[in-house]
Image (cartoon, rainbow over all chains, first blue to last red; front, side):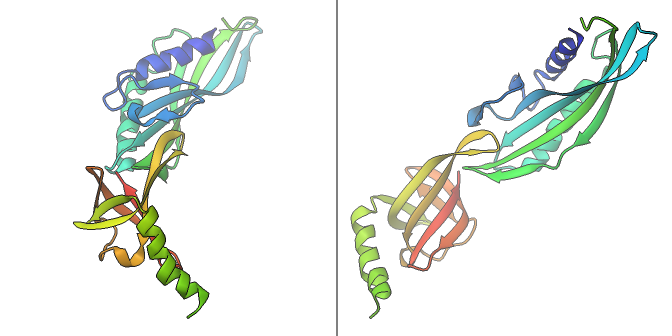
Length: 141
Length: 94
């Protein structure tokens, strides 16, 4: 399924970034271990059809949500921005994500950092990207 | 003497003296009291919330940023929470 291929491609592009390394998962519902931070989580957002082409093809806009989490005694919003830049650079280097059916990739809203107190400060931020891709009319694979 | 002042002046030191089994140093001064480092979930992260509680009168002059040592580990004061009964809880960052 092409949606799955997009999500897998995003995870692949964001694996081994300088700050988050291999601390990346998809659709994580469990808590993070403190020792496994900084980390990224990739979520599937809304997937909306935008055009139907001659009952042959469908164009879609898929929202990808990327959540970064850090815990540090250093300036946590600064670390979030470092991660944000690494994510942006990794994804926007190739707007197709290496997939022939992807037509465009657009950065979206970056949320306000959520700052909380634990044994050390904890911060989280959500980044959105929109992937414009195309499927067959009767088959999403 | 009111019940409240009796409790605060007499019983609190007695209770802390008997039950206050932990000692920290705050800016180099030893203080006996109760150490807590319970689990908390914050922003989807498993972490702890270290605090130390003792008689307000037992603490030296301190402020946010003061150094605390407990069990050979270093902490920094990020919160000072006195209550109306003569006790103070300090909130710590590791």
